[in-house]
Amino acid sequence: MAKIKNNRLKTILSYIMIILGAMLAAYSLDTFLIPNNILDGGVTGISIIISKVFSIPMSLLVILINIPFVYIGYRNLGKNFLIRTMISMLTFSLALNFFESFHEVTDEILLATIFGGVLLGIGVGLVIRFGACVDGTESVALVISKRTSLSVGQIVMLFNFIIYSIAALTFGIDRALYSVLTYFITFKVIDLVSEGLEQAKAALIVTEKGTDMANEIYKRLGRTVTKIKGSGLLSGEKEVMYCVLTRIEVFELKKIANEMDESAFITILDVSDIIGNH
Image (cartoon, rainbow, N blue to C red; front, side):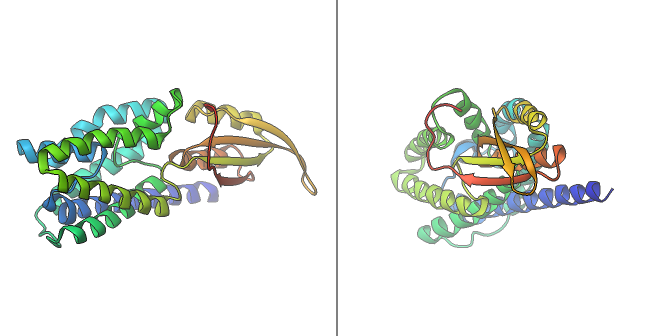
């Protein structure tokens, strides 16, 4: 009973942090970036361009454009990811509509670029840290990376290059360059908040239920697991599970491990490079 209550509290906390993160991201866009014609990447960037050109509410565009991306993410990342991401995107859309009436904080382009990028990075970083996405392009990039030799970061970068090229034609080269600067600031802040934007993670799990856990990880995350026989000085023989994954999947991996074996010992490591397609 205590375990169930604890899990519920963790779930509620994760939803609260996702909502706060999505609201902060929307605030940064409405009061710093959009008034100064500075773009974010991904679906948000596309939505800003379409909204500016055709006068369509951005809060509506974010939902509509994200639908196919979320569906692809659901098919490959599971129900829990879908629920968290739907909460994130719905909050983001409503917050964009709410903060739209707020006055811009500054019309100084450099200040808007820096502080808008920092706040956006904190908001998106919180959402990612608790297992969701604000922008569906990242979930699609994750799916593509599993089927190609390209990393998530490379795919997102290519997608954003196209968006910023369109921005240069729409808003001018100066605004496009400021948008690129905002993107890199946001990228670094997300890295700090979520403990790694695209950087791969390696998980070492010491457990007595290795086979069942490996099957569940493959079923829910599509990640293969390498089993290593281990022996503890006091605990005796156990299985050590080794798995390479992305930081979005770390949240779900921890949940799987806790469900399968609450006494499992988990270590999450940064991976500087990967050779081959895991």
